[in-house]
Figure (spheres, rainbow, N blue to C red):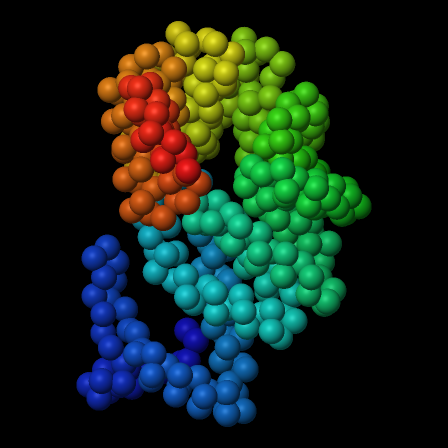
Length: 371
């Protein structure tokens, strides 16, 4: 697809040990280059008059791959698809770097936006970094592409959940809404308004978040876009002024996630509602919601969601006095976080284990873990 090389040429390169045939445990055989050979090949490619055209074909190939994957990333087969993208991460980075170096803003913005759900699991800050760089590129792009990229950037910043990113998330979401409204893209308005609600949750401005999530629901209904509607309902459930309303909205959102085959959204919402139940002192509801979230997460099999759900399971157990179950849950979270390099979950697991140590009266261990 990229070089136009015939199979016989590739076989000859393998026979001469210039290309290495590498087997993978969960995917097809891949052809790779040793780094010294790759450096030499890059130098030769740069010297060729068609070198840039080859790199463009490479970028186009991986842009097409990412855009095909994007609609599937929220479905039940997510782990296999994430593994496929993991295998291509160096190619995806190379395609993004080439597009940015050549000020190919349209390709850079489309590629970084298509990978939004990938960044969500593998590093929101990395996703924000690529989107920020693409948005700073000087070329003119269609308003629809820029609005989508700004919305994706707002989501990456919002889901980071830190006070220092809120201003940037708010600005990106509002600019996205303004651009989308100028071209009549109501669905994008709904998406970016939902991202703004998510950012407000991260800084504990739940009343404002509820207002924006309600507006996002109205926009999604106007656009007749169920994909946007489910996330608006999801955010309304997380920001509802009363726990009773949160549960009612949560049931609507879970039903909508289920219709769209979004098991990850179900597990995420159920676990988040269990956490809110703890905050509200609704321990009976928390105990009921936690097993439901665990069943959804285990059916999905996504390690990031499992890590998140086990963390909330640990909190429920800790705050209801089941210290043994809390220890097991946080230990499971720690194993997932360590294996898959989920830094935020790694932090939560260690913090949870500190809570277990404190509950057992081992203040010295708790202090060490918190430190």
